[in-house]
Length: 460
Ligand code: ARG
Image (tube, rainbow, N blue to C red; front, side, top):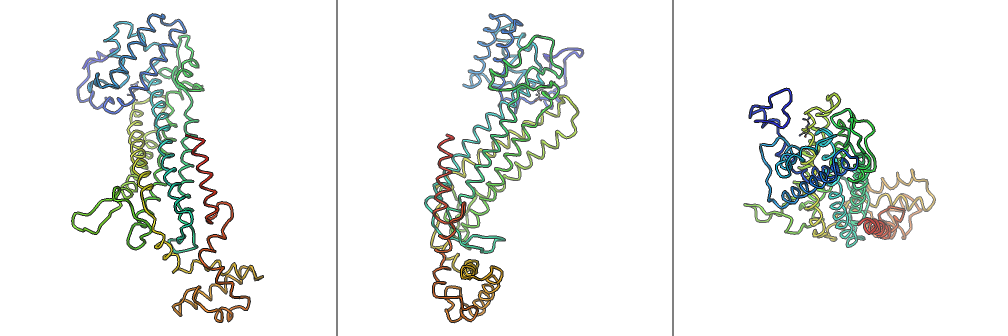
């Protein structure tokens, strides 16, 4: 096939090589970024008198028309084109004639692709942040409904201390807020415009890189043209942030799956977000959560793929770098799809407070509070801990729990025990007393909810 880049070669390549080399099948999704970048480039060229005002108008009108036609579907991508950059330029030249050939002055596809890709990642970051906010809002709504619902809190998946469902849910809200912070930081790191680096060495034309960068919403330009075309750190940052979002979603999924099992039955997922079994009519399968947990692996894979692709590439641009896009596209698509299903799944799930309470009642999860009771009466914590442990052992051997052991039996372990101990070890008291900042008491949970709601309102 005859190429636009006929130089020392005759520009005729083998079809197999063409297909192998071509990236239009996936980089076509950057068409809007590519065209916006080109419009800014035409403006800069005219401002610097590299092209005339008339030529600028011709180029911008042509590019805007292509943007419109690609957006509406009136113009289709040519699968034989080498990539999105060549395709747009070719259509432009077909539509506006010779002037179209002036657009590629003082730039190269190397800085062009670096720019388009950054702009694409930037747009993705915005979309993902807004989806994370919807998820945080769903979690907060559930936490508010269940702010005082008692359940066992676990360490080592062993019942540890009583907590509130609201508290547990708000832990996830906190994690997803951190994810937003990470994406925002990635956006700050990404805010460096590479266009004007040209092939690698800069250009002899009198360009105004800052003008072009500002037109595209960047506050800085890359200060080294070789790094400008070689840097893909922003894509790694993005994939790394995506991986952490998936890790959080996956941990949440695991709990959703456990909680909706008959062994736990802490929650019931809405039938809209579960599937049945073709042979077992009693099943309500948490497929969405399982899929999210499963898809986490592929997003980690995307991160590893890019890191591995980049590790041995010498400066500056090498075609290996064309491989950077699909991982980023896939990770972005996956994260967005997971967030889209997760937010309504959480919003519509039903917490079953009788079951969470029942689970909390059986596991001696108030043993710490029993020790704290003795500490309150003057015993050092270590001694109190030991006595509390002996009492648990005694209960276990007698088939009792702390609430059903008599005061007489308690007194055999320490005469500091009085009748008020039963109030101190009631699960309600255990939870309500944990008013430390960030703790599990309903009042503290309401405080956490208030903070998160304030954050969401400030950041819409
Ligand atoms: N399709 C290429 C990519 O995605 C664009 C840059 C090509 N540059 C070059 N010198 N061949 O990386």
